[in-house]
Image 1 (cartoon, rainbow over the protein chains, first blue to last red):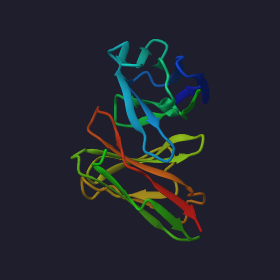
Image 2: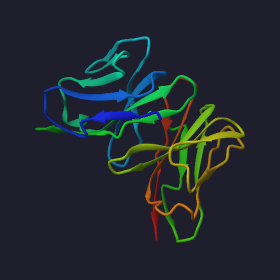
Image 3: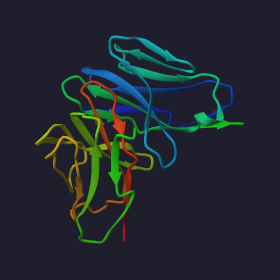
Image 4: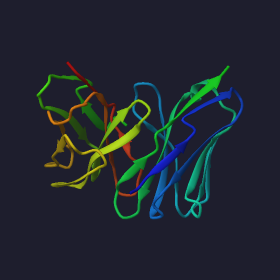
Length: 112
Length: 111
């Protein structure tokens, strides 16, 4: 069945350094890949997304890359700040329906 | 995402009891979803609906039921058959091929 693997489960980064979170998906029919940020006890918030016809997308300090051949996509956060500390989820949506599969999340700690 | 309202924020269930979680949206979205979130497990899909009067099972539908009688509403019932209901439940909605918008969630616990 469909599956999204996310790594690492926990990531600690010195403030100002970059953070990278990686995901792989199993279904080649997936065509949409959002990333969500969730702070403790709150709803997930969309931070960036990418579609299958694009290889890279950037929004200020956040970028996402997609390798369709390898079925792999990554989130890159540069110049990390304390407010970047949260849990980040990747997800993939199948082309045939609106079913969205989430990764298990990465807890990002920004160290002072 | 003020367009999606989940209630109540906290809910307690007694053994053998069914409880219903409410999800209402005023975004005119066709699709609605229910997810369960446990620590370290990410978001797992319970049920989803792409259109009124139709819904599909997700990965962990056992012990849950839903209805979609109105476009705006997608209530989730946690039945007594769900033996481990303690979790954070999130409702979401979207227009086809667009990002999901989430509600604030309902935290369900067993008494």
